[in-house]
Amino acid sequence: MTGKESGRLQTAGWACFVAGVLGLIGNFYLFMIGYKEIIAAYALLKKMPSVKLLTYVFPAFHDLGVVAAIALLVAAFGFLSRREWAWVLAVAAVALGLVSAWLPIVWPLMISMPVRYMAIFVPYLLLWILLIGYVRPMGARVLLLSLASGIAMVLAAMSGTAALTKLLGSGSPIYIATQQLNWIAAAAWGVFTVGLLLKRSWALPLGLATAGLATISGYPVAYYDSIETSEFSMFAIGPTVSLLLLILLLWRQSSLWEQPAGRSRPDIAVAGE
Image (cartoon, rainbow, N blue to C red):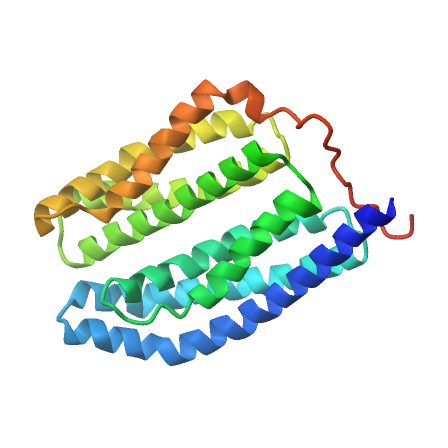
């Protein structure tokens, strides 16, 4: 291992450590000060389906955030001790952390409350770029595609949560038909992103299937939401991103799985080598 590659691993290790500590402390602190506050705000606005949702789903996303933070700390240990699994674990942990922080951003944003979880989301996003653009350079195309699939992941999770909110308010049966499909699509986008970064051949069919699923299950939520609110539904953004990804994967499928010329992947040496 060269000195440059060793420096990258050290940088990744300490970056994951800082992000893990931030995520661990931040998730507990922000949840403690924001849980009852946002429920009370939605109750004041008489948005009772949202109150029911937040009562149970907000803690679930808090749990995901804590799991992601712990995984980042383990990844930090892996990088600093040169373990082969460190980079994959770090990427998966950041993806989970981004999902766990996104909806706690959206919920207060919808009623003009402070979006405190940006303090977790932005560092995780920067760590994602560091891992893919510096620690193990994948090239601009893969970096951008991974960011796009990550966006599709969090938007699919948002569509699934929106459908659940509508169900709690006795909405259309279409929400029953699409709610879990959107969450499945969100999970599949996460798996696709990791497969893409590892250059696995199965990532392409998974991406095509996931893009189709997210598009088909996302647009009905947006359509019925726009009818009920008589305005454009922001839930249309998610399936639109997935549709664009579907077109991109069909169009540039071969070039996306190529290793960029002149770029070597800095493999992590096993401890003791």
